[in-house]
Every structure is written in structure tokens, then in C-alpha cells.
Length: 359
Ligand SMILES: C[S@@+](CC[C@H](N)C(=O)[O-])C[C@H]1O[C@@H](n2cnc3c(N)ncnc32)[C@H](O)[C@@H]1O
Image 1 (cartoon, rainbow, N blue to C red):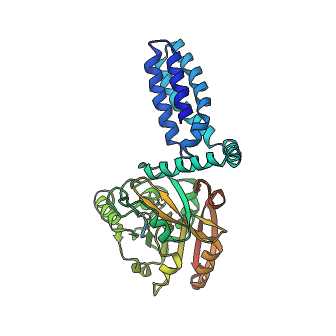
Image 2 (cartoon, helix red, strand yellow):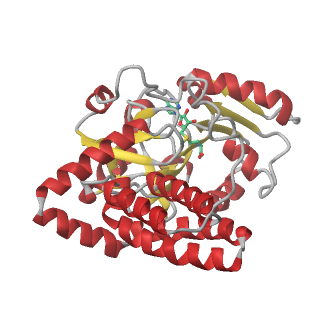
Image 3 (cartoon, protein in one colour):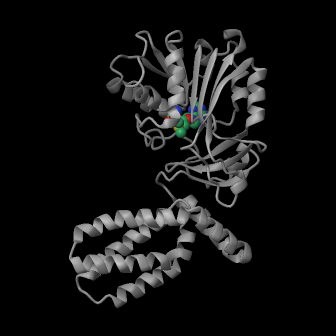
């Protein structure tokens, strides 16, 4: 950052046009902002600041020459993309890895910068940090006074109640389209305000007798119930904080949620006297390593985040009487843990588990 600052300060000083000064200031602020928000990390940005300066100089000269102020707004967006692309590129990461391997002090500084940034960020950047052997160890690393779960007013609403349907959702939609006809009672574990229910509505023919019950933490349940009064005009959505109610439902969904609770899938399911016949899983992180935990900064909260061993997870599902009917990757969902590349997850997973007795 220091190099970048000095570079930009020099650039400001040597551009001697009154028109250019405010423009340059604006861009400088934007550049700082863009670089600081890059999720790879702003420390690397410091190493690459001079490249950003060259690009700035060319763009400022061109914009001032054409007196095209609007172009500058567009340039800022594109420049931000360009800088981010450069910082996130595998070539940059490889180069930085090599530099840091040769000079360990740089790696220490880089790590310090990242951890400081990770703890400070309060907007959604999908950041991960650290590797921990247990939920308790990850939880203990969260600074006192910070939210450590979804169970607070800010975390309960920041994701919104509806989202765009991504390619990773289509395997789920495929199986839901088949299953909903005969299984109109759905238990959505960690279904938030009803994201899947509201987002899938336009793509699926929900059966007229659909009952979609969301199990979630109390703050989310409160916000979801309130919102449903306004949005769920057909009154098909319900909320609960009682996990045991899952035994009343033939169809169990968990999308991007079972990595958060301390109890594993198997530990939770062993509490049920009657197991759901069908389990649709999506957006869960697995690796071939032993199960471990990382910390997830989701903006309003930091939370322990389980990355389970795939084989162990499947074994526990088989022990519960399930068979694996289908599985797929979620290429849009990954988990990059800086300084732990061998613990990072390239693509999350989805699967359809069915009770053997239900086939
Ligand atoms: C990333 S959101 C996923 C939301 C939604 N299922 C989706 O696909 O986008 C994680 C969800 O898991 C819920 N969650 C986290 N910890 C939980 C717990 N201990 N018990 C129940 N739900 C939990 C959160 O409140 C949140 O709704």
C-alpha cells in the first residue's frame, strides 16, 4: 500500500492541470477503494501498486485530453475490474508465492495484513481465514463483541429473501420437479427468509397443497415470519426453530447451511425417530482431507464453517440408511483460504440421498 500511495502521490504532484487534480483525486480514492476491497487481499495490491499507477497515468491523460468526464466513470469501473483481475490471476498468485517463499518476511507481513483486513471487513465479501481442528477452536478465534452466527438482526436480513437462480441450482430444480408431486411437505434446513422457496417459485409448478417449512435460527425465523405476512400470499411457508420437526417431512432440503451448525448432519439426524425419505443437499464444501473448520466472514458476522471429509460424510449417510442417487459440483461456489491453499475448496457439492426403503 505504501508503494501505491507514494506512486499515486507522485503522480498527483506531476500532473499539472487544474482540471486533472480533482479527477485524479477521485480516481485515487477509487483505486484505493477498489484495491482494498479485493478479496484476494490488499497487501498484494501494495506489491502491484506501480502497475496500477501506469494504467492510471495513461487513462487520466486520455480522459483529460478528450475532456471526457463521463468516460472517467466508465474507466473507474473497468479499471477496478482490471486491477482485480490482475490481482486474482493465477499468474499473480504464483509470482507472489515465489516471492514470499524467497522472502518469508513478506509472507508474514502479507498474512498480518490479510488477517487484519479479514477481521475488519463489515460488508459481504465472502472471506475465509484460518484452519481449525474443531468448531470450538474456530469459535474461540472470533474477537469478543463480534456476532458469531446468523442469530442477530443484521445477519438475519442481509442476504435478502430472493436471489438469482444459478447454474448450480438446476440439479436441485431437476430433482425438486420430480419429487414435489408426491412429497408436498418440505423441510428446508437453514432456508433463511425463504430464498429457495421464493426464487424457485417462478421455475417450478408448486403443488397446490405445498407446505414449505423453514428451520432456522430464532432471528431469521422472526424476520422470515414477518416477511411472509407480506410476500407469501398463498400461505404455504412456515417457520420453526425445532429441528425434531424434520421427522414429520418426507423431503429434507439443505442448501448452503449444514456447514454452519456445530452438530454434523449425522449427529442431527440421529436425533430423529423418523428419517426424511429424500434429502437434497446443495452448496456444501467437502474435501478429501480430515474434517476441519475455517472462519467465514459474511459481513455482519464471523462464523465457524465446517469443511467435511466427503467419504466420512457419505459413510454416515449410508449408516443412516441412505443411498446416493445423484451428485454434482457447484462450480460457482468455492472457498479460498489464504495461506492454506491445500485446504481450499475448488467447488462445493450437491447430492440427492434417498432412504433405501423409499426406492
Ligand atoms: C448461507 S445461508 C443459506 C441460505 C439458503 N439456504 C440459500 O441457499 O441461500 C445459511 C443459512 O443457514 C442458517 N443457519 C446457520 N446456522 C444454523 C443453525 N445452527 N441452525 C439452523 N440454521 C442455521 C442461517 O441462518 C442461514 O439461513
